[in-house]
Each structure stands twice: as structure tokens, then as C-alpha cells.
Image (cartoon, rainbow over all chains, first blue to last red):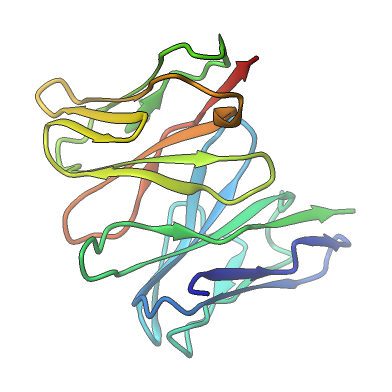
Length: 114
Length: 111
């Protein structure tokens, strides 16, 4: 099956710890994205990558880091510098030939800071 | 002022009703318009994608875009309890993959 997978589904973190969220896609899409979703605020862009080994900050990049070493993978690290990390994190990809702006989402990771 | 404003709802309708979901935007560079459906604790699912003014129909769903008024709508005909979800509008500029989302509208269709 083609699609986007995210792991883990639920993640609990103690204050002061870094955690890494996994995102993998087998759609052969060039671009990948990370969003954060909070109640009543829609989705906000954290980082995005349009090609391997290149990525740009989105609207709320502070306290987060990413890497893009492979086309299929775009992991997100939530660092201890992120002051309010409890949220639902969504990974997406785009780059289909017929509709390159269409973004497809993974199932999400819910991060809770204890 | 946010670039995209979406009617926040929540919206509660009886089964079989016609539902209208709406977004306005301020950035005239937006040329691609999408509607996503998101069930609780799940990732958003792309419902409709359009890039021209006018209507686009897919089954019970119709997406309407009015670029002159900077206004988009999603209509759901013969609504079903399975349509109960959060609906998100999203839009982007050409050549730039970033999507700007509305806040989402929570829809409940009761039997």
C-alpha cells in the first residue's frame, strides 16, 4: 500500500528530554512537511523539505529540528527548547505528477509532556 | 488578521441536510484550494482539490471558489452521520508547497 506512516502513535516525554518523531513515505514524493495541530488553531507549519538534503523553517520552527537524508524519510526532533510541545504532530508529502500541490497526510503522533 | 478565516462552528445538522462550510482569504496569491476532512485523532484526508473559480463536484461534495471575492465553500448534500468530522480548508500559492489552513469547522450530523 502506498502512503505515509508515522510512529509512534502516542509519545510521552518528560520535561527536558528531546524526542524524535518518525515519518516515512513510499509515494515517491519530493516534498515533505511537518505540522503541529492544537485545538481551535488548525495546522501550523513547522518545517518543510522540497528535496533531499535541503529543508526550510516554517512558521513555528523554534524548538524543533529536522533532517532529510533520504527521500522517503523526514524525522522531526522536538527539543527541550520547545516550551509547549504537547500537541498532535502531522507529517505530509506532496509531489504527485498530476497535482504537485496536493498534500497527503500521515495518521499523526500525539505527544504529551509529563 | 489571519490569511485564512474559517467559520469555526460547531455545526450540528440532521441527517439528510445540506451543509455549507466556508472560508475567506486575504492573500490574492493563493491559487490552489483544498478541503480536508479529519476524524477525531486521525490525519486529515483530502476531499477536494481545485485551482479555478467555479464549482467542482464529486459525489455528494461540491467545492466552490470565487477568487474575485476571495471566498471558498464546500457543500455536502444528503449529509450522513459518517460525515461528522472536522473540515479544514487549505490553500497555497503557485510554485510553493506550503499550505495555509483555516481553523477548522466541527460538523456533527445526527440521525
